[in-house]
Image (tube, rainbow, N blue to C red; front, top):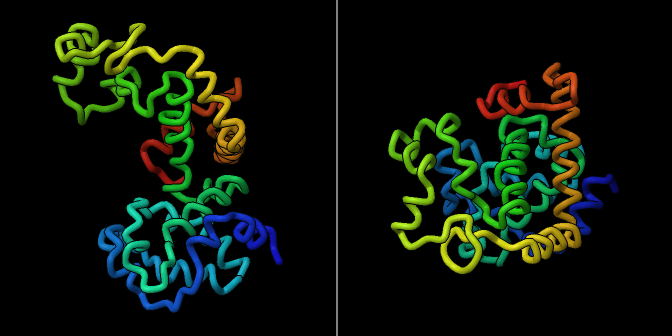
Length: 231
């Protein structure tokens, strides 16, 4: 058995998500992502069931595993209680662990998610903090957001918030003790290690593409990924 198959079968989510698939296609029929992408959960599960290591690796390198929105509609409709969404969770993790995610447009965007959401959680305690939604990076937000961004204390105080201040209230500052607990959770569960691997393999891809700075930064690579250019 190959390394990918070994990793698949070590994950409890794989066993919970793929019990007795008969390839009926109900998951694809109910899947919202299948309506908008060239995406077929039934075929994905079929490939995994084949135990074909090479075919599964091609999945790990593709955009396909990143189309799932994790709504788990497949779970609610499957007549045999399978859940392709859970199988996809495992495939995504393995793709990140082995570096295959850098081979697809959607996969490369994991560095954006890691830095914009993952790092923000550890730094502020929030998934999305207003301070990271910079107007120059999000022109779609328009001039109203630019004003809000530049006047946060005034705006959030009017709305009953407690923006970046001690105490209770919306958008309050999360204290260091809580942030320490968050970091400990990420370390114990393997989240920190996974973040490190996303950084490592993204840096390798940046180097391969000639987009690594002399000081080792990958800002140019991230700009490319943000624009969803093929590298």
